Image (cartoon, rainbow, N blue to C red):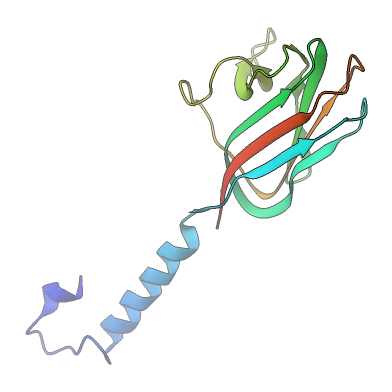
Length: 159
């Protein structure tokens, strides 16, 4: 941008256009999400109905994807996503051992959108991003069919 005004008499280091350029760069930086290392959980011997935090309450978050798995067949999994104090609905899923499941957007029979855990890889069908000023992700199993490890991963970015 400053190169376009070369020869106009403005100094690119001291005049108001330089200050304006710096302000615009700062605004762009503040609005840009920076990818973070994935938040992960690997909970051996998980307790039935106990929530395990994968992503602690974090400010200015864009959740890119969430996976969950358990090492025991027949366990029912749940994922709780809280965005700015609102808990998004998650449908239970009876899981097969050591199978990755993704949280995906789902159209309920009421015609409303909700979230659910599904076998479908969300990288193949990404209809949403979850964003909020304050986001937390927890997972649990609601059955007690075994002691296999409960694992989860949240891919996310922050501002």
